[in-house]
Image (cartoon, rainbow, N blue to C red):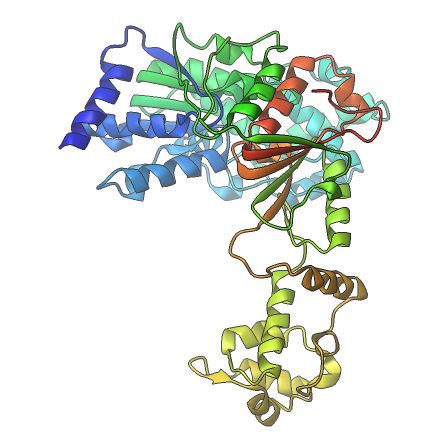
Length: 525
């Protein structure tokens, strides 16, 4: 009962007493933005609002999923099917328009399109309906398509986007050919891409009617998404909350203009107390935001902890033998260089967007063999992974088949495998001789074992990511590499660059390790 009363008070603070229909909640790093939004949802439910009348929209699938998971965990009596409008804007448009996945452009469709115009699309278009069009800008065909998509998202003319600083090797004539072919292909096949969904939603002009509408990570919305929100969703909602942090608006290259968020409403609420960022790291963060011209001035407090900031000349100068680490870089190119160094040093790590630094199946197979040669027994599931990597000289095709037909409920030792499957390995053989692995993989695993890295931990101890991919994440120890590129250093939008580094700094919960730039291009704190 006391809990319900506290929730009612929190709800009243944000809803019952408000004058304006629309409210902006500013949530600096670690100030409990998601917790606040979930309390708004819970308060609405206590006031007998149907959960299907609550919309929780987010820029990314990651944020939408996190919010839904938190709501189901924190609010008693809720079921996943109650929160049907906890989703991304793209997902809402998809479901509201009654589209099917067969109507959405797939990777195969883009390949067909590419063959018509002589372009190769080397990256797979995201087709999970949750997020927008993301093509790599590194390849020829993808770069052309990226340009088309960004022009549409920003709602600017294609020629204007072409002259905005894209690769001078691109041909505007080729761009126009692709643009027309793309439109024609979709018309002939009845297909939609992600932007079509938003455009059609806006054109239709109808939406679910919400008692409470929350737009999370609102600082990251592109112009076309703001049009969807302001022109369609807001008129069909009673109370609207835009939640985010303008200092973390880091997608300007996608057409995001932070002014949309700053001017979203007259009524504004600031969450002031950070539960993540310690004092010394907070000071460095403020040093950056004080230099940002276009922003909402905010006074927010760090934790009671001092925290630590240290400087290094190289990432390998940072002692990462223990603890939880997040290594952040400005670009994928620099992240790749970091990964190469970590491999040489024998660290096992997780690369955001790519996965583990070595296949976990390989690591599991090694552990299985170590157990078998010690006389221990292994489960059938363990042995199935192991069997896939056994050197062909040690087992016949019939033996592999026999290993695949082992009884699930039993465990098997090495002697049994020799008898049942004709497995020829002996107790004295090292895993390098038993498993068929490349020399590079063998050398890497040897170095990891020499370092004493824990192989099969549930969560990665060391993560490597670009700052953009790490947004929303955190770690006790953060290593931030200050190397950048000429394009970033000479960008016309230096406010956006400052925001990127601000995001990087504020991921640290205890220690921030700053690796100084190695060349002329980098960010100066």
